[in-house]
Each structure stands twice: as C-alpha cells, then as structure tokens.
Image 1 (cartoon, rainbow, N blue to C red):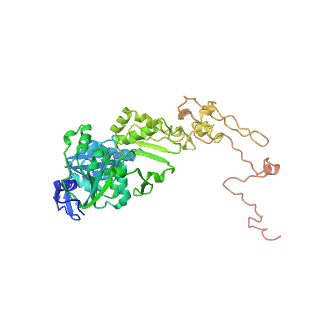
Image 2 (cartoon, rainbow, N blue to C red; image 1 turned 120 degrees about the vertical axis):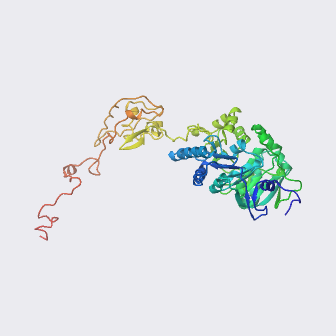
Length: 519
C-alpha cells in the first residue's frame, strides 16, 4: 500500500545519505556508513576485545561512547575489573567513557551526542531510541559494532518503511507510552519485524523530544529494525535546552511521501493502557485491571526517561505513604535528571513516600547515583568468629529488638561483651534462662570480657573485644538416659572407650575361642 507518490520519507533520506552499497529495495542487502557507535558495560567488554583482535589503532567513527550503566552493583571484584578494563580500552582506542553514575546510555547519549541526520549502531537492543532526534540508530551485535568502529559499513537487509500517521492531541492522563502500547496492542511483539517505523503527521506537534524517545525506545518490543521521527521544532527546542543548538538539522518527509505500509492513530481517542506481566504485547486498558493488587512500581530507566515522568509520580505521592506491601523503586535516568528533581523539590517527595519498613534502605534506589548506598541487610550487625567461621553477633539483631526473646541465649550471650556488661539495647527483651531445679545444672555467670570497647552503631563492641575462638563456654547438659534423674544403674554402668569397641574376653561366646558352642 502507498500513502502517496513521488516524495521520499525520512527513513529513505537517512539511508540514501549514508548508502555505500546496494539499492533501497526491500529485501535486498545494503551497506550503510556509520557515524556513531554506542556500547555499554554488559556487552562492551567483548567489543573491546574484538577491537584488540582487529589490531585497530584508533576508532574511525565520528563519535564512539562507552557507557557503564548496567552492572553497577559491586557484588565482587569482577564488575570493578570490567569497568577498569573498559576505561583503559576507551583511552587506548579514543572512545568517550561515561563512568558509573552519569546515567543510562540511551537518554544520556540523546542529551550529549545525538545529532539529527546521523547514523548509529549500538550493542544494545534499545539503541533505536536515538531515532527520536531524527537519527538512524540500529541495535546490532558486538562484532558489527567493532567493525563499524574500524570504519567498515553496516550490512543489513533493506527493511520496509512503516508509516504511522498521528493526528489529534492526547487527552489528560494519556502519555507517549500509551502510543507505543497501542501499537503493541494492535500488532504484538513481532509486528515490526524487518520494518522501520516512521511517525509523521500533525499529531507530532504535541509530543516533545523526550516523549518521542519513549516511543522510539519501545520500538524494539515491536521487533522493529528501528524507529525514526522527523527533526522539527520540538527537536530544536530540546537541543537548545541542552546547549547544542548548532547541532540541529531539519529533516522532514517530502510532501506526498510514500510508505510500504501505512497506519493511523488518533491521539485524542487513546486511553491509559497497561501491559500486563508476561509480555509487552499483552496490553489492556487500565480500567480493565482496576482493583488488582500491585506489589512493585518501578519508575525510570530508559523506557521512562523524562523529567515529567518522575515529577508526575512525585506529585502523586506528595504527603502520602506508599502501601506497606508495595515496593516503589525510582531510577533517575541521568545525573542531570536527578539534579533537576532535587532543585524542584521532587526528590524529597519520592524519598519520603516509601513505607516505614523501607526506611532502613537509602530510600528509592537511584541507579544513576554512584554515591547511593547499596541495599543493606535486614539485621546489620558486626560479625564474630565462632568455631572458625564468621557469624553475626545477635546483640543488634532480632533478639535485641525483642522479636525472638531468648532465641539465641547460650550462643550469642557469651560472645558479645555488650550482653556481658548488661548493656542491652533499648527495648531488648532480657535473656531467658532455664529454671534451676532437681536434675538441672545451674548456668554459671558468663565470664567478663577481656577489654570492653566502645559501643558501635549496631549495639556491639568491636570485634577485637569479643571472646576468643573456641567452643561455647556454656556447659551443655547431656543426660545418660531418657529419664529426668540419672538412676544408680545408669551411673554405675561402665562407659566404653571412644573410638574403639571393648575387646571380648577369651573363652566368651563373642570371642570365637574355646567354650563357644552350646553348653
């Protein structure tokens, strides 16, 4: 189907301006010159190793950026080693290096390096988000990115151009996310395979550059090769706000441009939509799932990168508390977004919204902030040695808070000098001892500590002041029989030596010697 005759659309203009080999006929192979590359830490290590194998001296693209935004949790030394390797490789081959905390790669690249009319490949499936500025951005494998850095063209099969005409203006509470969800509701997760989606029409005037980023980003969920928007006044406003007005180039479809596939969406007829868990293609209206229990709400990442997305949530939770069963996680997409939220006072609203049980954590988890503290354990406490292994000292744990009174008596009491000196934490339940009585041995008082040290925040003295390694000093009662009192017969019974059975006497039935047999 065609939407007109004669003119060229934006996608064909971008491909024609960078075409190295082939013809722009759907289904044939073409070669495209690449201007920019994007890699992230989860896939960038392999790209850098491939650059080393290619014996490349310096990258030959206009801009190549290495982002660190995926593996930020330092669970062990491996992530740290990857980051050091990526930083050294970026210096060696001439890449820009975005250290942990600068932000998620796609919105950060859009803010700092996006140029209308350029081509880009990235080792991430959501590289297509850069199409919001009028770029031809395609997510590919690490080897293709390494070859592009070496100056080689990208060889792909020429896809179909899918023109989506937008009309009208979105009603209240309808956002750009509902536009792409409507596409997923209509076509599913494979509706865009071997297609470039190009949005056009008068409805684009109501979508900002960051709104278009949301739509272009989730074009990957449709299976599309990439998504393209024209470079118009809204793109110019975005670049002017970023201080990069000189990078603007107007790119628009010719009048009467033709498309291989056409579709139309009336923005005024949309309603809030939601994708149910399991598949992004399982899209239903929000009213159909109203009343269902929600356990987790995540705001941010590259799918909702705009300042308005965070400000709307902050306005909703201002002065309120999130339900105790709901986890609210906020992930600012870049350091710039986090600074803007703080200046407008929205950060305080988001931090104060989580329920009291989450107060032990550093508020909402901020992935883009390198200074954010890692998720803490439920019962932080110093660790002491016991039988050659490290075990947490229970003085600052649940027993100290009174949740399980007496649960750890006889184990932590003789190990923690805080309990030895009788300085339990406020609200702690007193230790429970077995009552003395007939047949029971009295529990001796625990020995005093070697050198009492200062009390730490966890309610226990430093590790060096705790009891030395060895077995517990509390004696354990080991009765010789199942009865409460030890009978005289049990007490007089000889106990065999440990490790060896008693040797039978000569001439007995068990020895097998003389006298064995029936009497």
